[in-house]
Length: 259
Length: 253
Image (cartoon, rainbow over all chains, first blue to last red; front, side, top):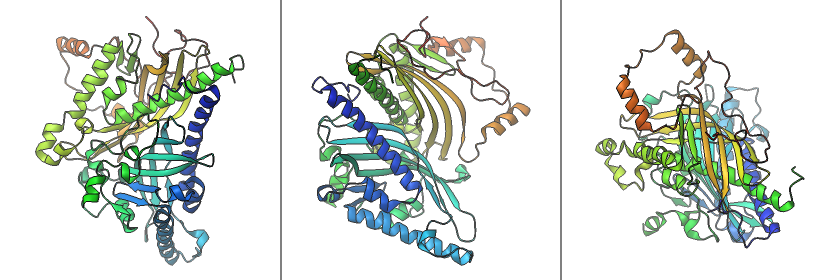
């Protein structure tokens, strides 16, 4: 068990470094929350994600509908597409409000994403080279809508993350943003279909519009957590694909590859 | 900084502080999936000193705690299975039915953790601005609510591992995402009380108390109410030397 943090084969120096590693990782994910709130996605990838060629190739960003694999693909979706989406909102906003200038600094006008992380659960590998973590987000997204106020959604996500140490610094290697719930604030839940009408989920539509590397249903929130993904953390000594939060660790990846 | 402790003791206590957070976060995720045995099997002490309490009372001893938090809670998680199977047969392909009833995700924040100078126990307070939701219910209606609670938790270092020892849950407010306004709703209930629940005959009430097998019947904490004083039923831990009746969330009888 990871609760058995004190292992006889660790020296006291190693033990306090392991304590410090876990604090560094929690700090890293706290920073990510602030980067998201500040819409600093390019900076997030540059500062918080893996940089070395070895890990850039296998880095992944997952959701309920698949994975973007490789930092270039992640960047094209997470940064380039996002900026294009923000530009469309700004174009519409400026058309409705001539006083607002249509320039880069105004991207995100009328929008807010706040995904605070809590419930930190971090497992450091026995060999100390990698770590895994779960967090829970009770957040919200607000996006300005042409002709009206912003549409505000409550967003509940479970974050499942793999970390690797690069040049002495912990970096995000695989990140799954597993959405459990997204409802428009004030929406009458009695009118919300329990099984969503295909093509009407805005988070799904946004994720798929970037053309993910792997399109597959990784988690179906209609079934609560009964589908078992993202799987729960268990202590481990050395990182292997089977326990990855990248696509290679999804229990249905073989079925996807057979297709 | 506890400079009166040796470096080795401080390292041990730093690990204990992280273990307290790890154990409570593990509880939150496993409880969210109704994976009760995965929590109470490996993460809890199995001694007679363990306790789990809620506003309505407390169970003492591993046998009583697991009766309530494993046997009863697992059944509750799976209980909608047969009714839902009639409506959504696809659920037969699910990996685990225990989460069918709902996801009660008690997110954690506002951590306060103290480890005893003797290194044998740790104590922690948390606040949860939690969420409880279920997309698939027998009535085919969506359910989503906010649940705010306070926690008081004690942990023990036992055979080289940190384990859960006591948990005191203090729920304050709960309401549906679409309409929640806890203070106003409760006030309206006071002004215009809803119809009372049918009175339970005394002999049945005795059965309920006996069936619940509570060791310490409550109330130990009351939900928020606009006409009650502020409660401090699970005060945060202060720095302490060793666990005793002044530094615990379950006093010895």
